[in-house]
Length: 159
Image (cartoon, rainbow, N blue to C red; front, side):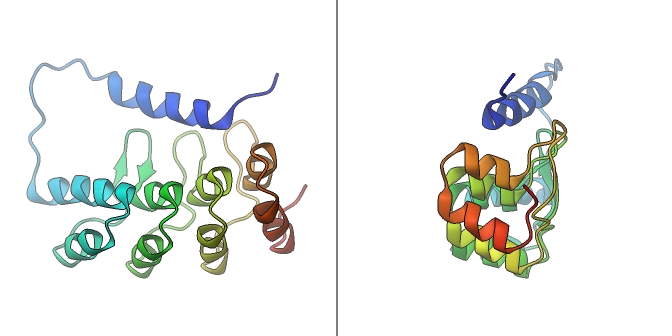
């Protein structure tokens, strides 16, 4: 049976965040509010806001849902400058969600070769696997991202 990797990851994020049954609003500290804002800024490619939040102390490796990070959000959106800023702030290049997705997988599947190249240059594991065994190479191939497929192969991704 062929799995659609994006649906699997998105379902995990939705399920992980929708299981909260409390009626009380969460109390956010200044640092958790900044980390939430960092995630939003990274998702939208707002590099200036990402820099401001990092300078103010936002946690670059804070996770959302089931382990989604600001770096993954920036990689998915394809903003190379934002990805570089997060990596320079020591974002975990090989961080994985609970289902095993990485920033490189997101960039590969969404067709962002410049982001994929930058992640590879910063030592992204080209052979990391999701919990069901998918790699960035498999995802890029499934999505028809031939440029990224060739880049991953040259970087040592195993078929």
